[in-house]
Amino acid sequence: MIVITCFLFNLGYLVDLPNTYILPQGGYDITIRLEPDGGMIARIGMSPFEGFMFGISEGGKYIIGAGTPEWHSSPGIQAKFGIKIMPVSFAIGFDSEEYSSRETSLGIYGVIGGDLEGKIIPYLGVNYYKKVGEGFNPRFWGGCEAGISKSISLLAEGLFHDKFIFNLGLRWIFRDRIMLEFDFKDAFNNNIRTIKFSYTDYI
Image 1 (spheres, rainbow, N blue to C red):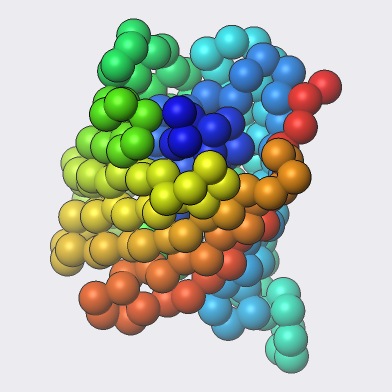
Image 2: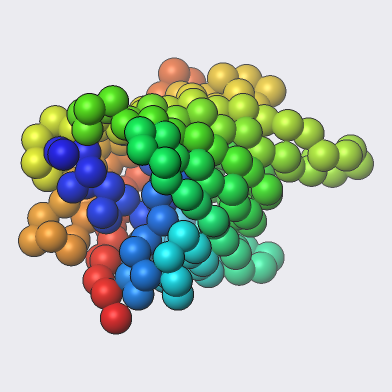
């Protein structure tokens, strides 16, 4: 039950990659990601009915600090449908946001997860994205969330995108609604350090 408690406020993602979690009906979250080069991405997500959630995000580089802000060319759009047949859960979705370690947006994706006695929840996923001048290409990933305590969980994910990208995260939930997360993205190569804040509540 430890990881399930954390999952009530996990935004439907591990570090950068989606899991199968869907906000309960009427739930919403507000998330701010702080990235290198003064980067910041803000996202609002909500669930109008059971099994579906959507969101919109916007951000860019040099938002914090000196320099002229460079905003993303267009807002990111997220949508996800999910179903759970314990101990397995499934989700399909779309995400057009670009993050530093993903290099390109996810586009259309599918993911499957399993609950190993509420302590470790692994995921496997695939998405189809389009490279400039090429058609759509498949990309695979895997990851998991492990409960360390009632309010702290460890995140890990690996993405195969021309090279292997490994991300780590440490997530802390406090006061039942607020999340603070420290991430180490592309840890084996560039070790990009980011911070994520989130507030989750219900209408």
